[in-house]
Image 1 (cartoon, rainbow, N blue to C red):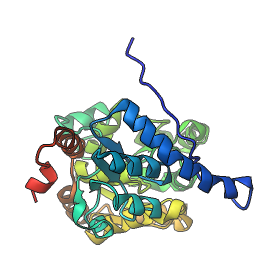
Image 2 (cartoon, rainbow, N blue to C red):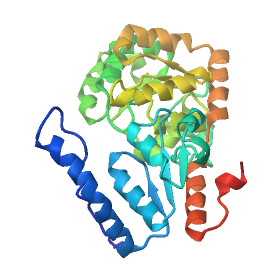
Image 3 (cartoon, helix red, strand yellow):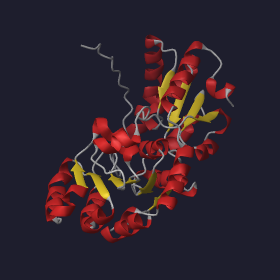
Image 4 (cartoon, rainbow, N blue to C red):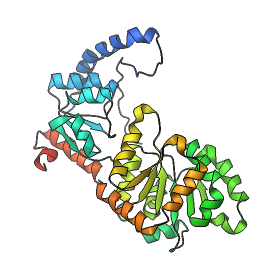
Length: 325
């Protein structure tokens, strides 16, 4: 059995309440009280370095770390950082970002690390396609919604399935809640085409193989998804999640501006639009150019870059991000 990690909780509260409530008055007080609490906690635990992904909840710790002379590394995964993370970046020792345009938000103490993702090292494309049952001369369309199933994507796939399977072998990660509808849609296909549609709730350990095997990916535009399609070198159609500050829209637009992806707004993703866009990308030359552009943006060693930066900060050694600049 592994050792348990100690857990410490500050009084600051996540800002999830909508509208006016008692928390409107209490939250600033909680934030103020969390700064000395964090200062005391860091004095007791005495960390060599502090790593955070930013946000409102990280502010007391970053302020306390600065007061105690503890180096801090903030990582921002989206092209457009939130206001809290922008503020925190002014007090941090270094800021790591996933996308080059984000450097403008943090100034000279920022560097591009990329997004930590699963490893694609050693995965052979031909072997991955064989393991997934894809014929060598077939085209694989991989559809997934990120960490959760996405009803919008599921509806578009199922609504256009009869046309899609005539052109693609479709691997659809429908989530647990989408499997019943996916199974019914498969049964409704002509028997000769059913083998060209594979629905899974999730792939977990086989996701890296699926990305390497794919000829086209359709999915959301979270930081991890964008980083993985780039590292795998695969063309994509990105459907940004329309809420949460529109962060995914900026992520998707960066890849699209670099020629690596197409962007379809969430409210425009109908079954008809899904079929139209994927049919246009049957063009192998166009898709190959997108894949090359994606690969040029990939940073598969992001996790190592962040780890090396943190170790150097803890040791007081020259920072890799500065010596490489």
